[in-house]
Image (cartoon, rainbow, N blue to C red; front, side, top):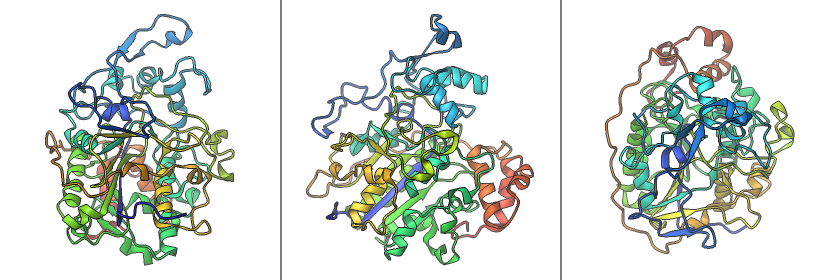
Length: 477
């Protein structure tokens, strides 16, 4: 296959946490004065599939037994920057309830996407209306401005209707090795599969994972034993390293940027302050756009690993390619034949026309999901089949080449800065599921007993105290 995107020398992927398209960008084109300039492919619907003020969810479980709904309407903005608080549920069974209500998943659901409020109320017993609040333009100007000045997909789905580890595994490996949830005690040896980084290493193609923390290790490295080799240490750096490499036009061909998940978290994982994620995106934007050479050479993909239980009105499609034998069936009997919930995905490049909305142009109807990033890398670098990851999901995925429609690079547009400074997050809080997984993965990597260690670290400060002696200035092991 001929290489695509010949004008691109660097691809950078930033993956944040646990937000649906509706939650973060549902109101993106709600104003009649600001509408998309083009839709790709050209024969796709000529309107942005965002929120409408008429959308609602029932708050009474009796609705699913035939009673009239007690409607909770979608809201035009959130009441704070930490909504929803507390954290919604995101495991496979909870996502199924959010999408299908009490009935089993099926292709003709009775109550499509109407279980979000009831599930949130049942799981948290707290302010169920929060799950129907969506961020406004004024609240998250960075992501809105990037989306309007470049391209956003309103039909990009996470790869699994479940949690962080399976979805991040799909973006790195094209499979979750049959795992549906993170696991009560997430064990990296259950995820011991080759990654795109191993493929690039075998081809002597440069790559780097940049991690915005000085305390915790890289989540990507922690998840996959095949990345634990000490000889790979120099492939893992800090956000300061990323800024340096942008300024000196020395980014590797492929970069993956992680937010901070524990200390001063900016991953946007509910209920972390979304303003912190806005600040991170703005810093990444400034690093790339401030260097003329880096700007002209770079394609930036901003996405989220999964929806994290936040509301979205679009039912994820069925017909996903089953990636491998470990997934047929995988955990809980799931065959990975349907996608997860929509997540915001924005493409930033000087070769992207402002105001673009894009969807899959696959002749088979296969939508974009996280494996489209891997398909893009494969086609961009011309990775031969005998070296590429063997996942059938990657083989079926469309790449994003159609989005770069301009023949010459654009000038750098003005992107709106964050609306406010982020508020601090207390380290006295208990660990969330992702933070727990960082602890247990590190325990496995360094020969400790994961479950016992986790019990000894009840708060985030305990986890900080565990990680701090083991971390280094350049990167967190």
